[in-house]
Image (cartoon, rainbow, N blue to C red; front, side):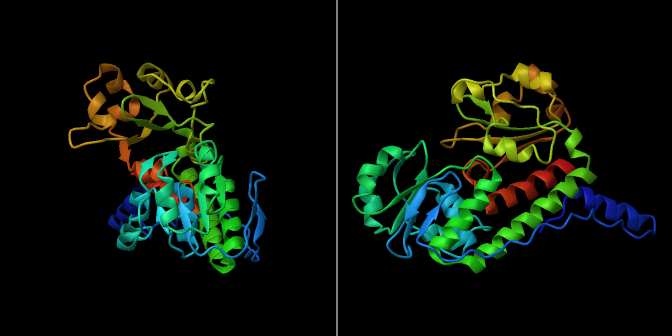
Length: 319
């Protein structure tokens, strides 16, 4: 695991002065995670009942949370819609690149290709894949998941472990994640990050902010000052902060997910680098703007993803 640069600098300075390096901040111990028992009838964190006729051996993932849960449990999807996430070195690496990809837009996936994967279970996202239910359930159950906070991620991991009989793997993954959260809070406190306004934003044809009503914004608010409430209304208005509004809140750290398509597409950083208002934002002026990978920060909503995001965010912020 990479240590954040804050502690690396402390070690170098201490060594140069002939002193012993200071200890890393100690995290409060987290409650031990227990292994769940196998079950083919479960209720997920949002009260949705899932009943299967047998342990699912082939699971098709239409959302990154599904891929995340399976990898945490030592399993591989039968097919996926997030190949970039699966093929990361901290997921399945080269083996992830071998998993068949379901074509089609998000929420409009090719049902025939899903059927070709011969799934025992298909997992999609609530509010996105509802319209596929009638077609998909002709050949497999469809489980629609919804993550509002990281505790939901843990709950889904536990539910998947019940269905697949992987309680031992779930207990290890859950404990690892809970320990990482505790250590992350200690690291953030030691670096004073709760007093530093941070921002997670995204952009393609327009920019938006991951507000505290968004799962990523909610997660980051546990480690940073995060003054980005939802603006209300639909999705586009709720997260539509202008450059001027971003300047007014003066974030000192910014994480950007740039959705780029094609070789000539520009990142958000490149798009706004000459904007005079953007240049005045404290994070921009001090070089604390970081482009991060959308396949993880935008698609990863499981315990593994949140753990990696936390490590990356703390390391970049304290560096």
